[in-house]
Amino acid sequence: IDWNAWLGSTTPLLPMEMAEPKQGFEEAPELAHVDFANRYIGGGVLSGGCVQEEIRFAICPENVISLLVCPVMLDEEAIQITGAEQFSKYIGYGFRLGYGGDHKDESRVADNGSVLTSILAMDALDFRRVFNPSIEMQLHESKMLRELNKAHAAFVPVNELSLQTHPMVATGNWGCGAFLGCAPLKALIQWAAASQCNRRLRYFPFDETFGPELEALAGRVVNAGGTVGSLLRGLAEVRDSNDHLHPGNLFKLFESAHARENRGSEALKRSEATSIRLARTVHPLRC
Image 1 (cartoon, helix red, strand yellow):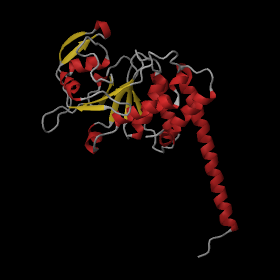
Image 2 (cartoon, one colour):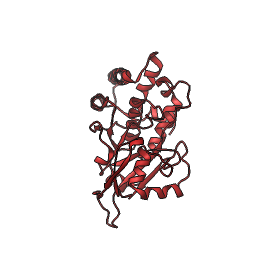
Image 3 (tube, helix red, strand yellow):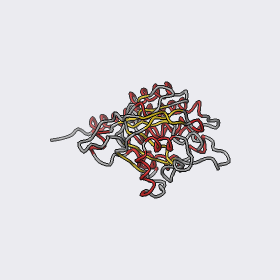
């Protein structure tokens, strides 16, 4: 999808749910789970890696088969894995990761006996080698377009049954740890991409504190009739009209920009309606 098509999207933004802080995806086995992937799927699962993707592959070892059959992901590619069962629990994270005991997977089961799990693997932009990975830089059209199309490839259902089985996606701070992504921006980008695919998000902020603010913002924007295009146009306005951006004020600046656009759209609709009424008065229709 090109940038102009994203900006012009009239697809409604869907309501967003918010998980409790420090809660992991494992608390919601009925949802499709985003894998914050390495572009080489699995990352360091076979070489000592111990963060989100490697943990998921370690507790659901059937995922490791993907390392054999899936090549490196390109910018507009993602990988969807279904049916991988969880066999073990874990404790800790990073270098404190440890085995937490056996696990009985309580996920729903298909007619053929496979568990109805879904993993959506998508790799984020890596800003570690960027001199100044500022929010202004991450708001650049090319950066947002890459992340939108990557998330869209991951979220789009492969068929109608996939959407019916997993209408909601569990995600969180994608690419915002070692890769230095801006978590509030990535949340909005994922919201746009998921809505474009007619899938709702449940956002897991984990140790970020903006969960209640994001949930309230999403509710107001949805109630105001926000669309995928209006969200992205709002972010573009924030980028172009603010010199001192930081993650802590992104949501407020975006909501102000979105509200200005809504007022402008409503004024235009009223003007067009008035013009139509005047035209009908001056040139009445004749049957």
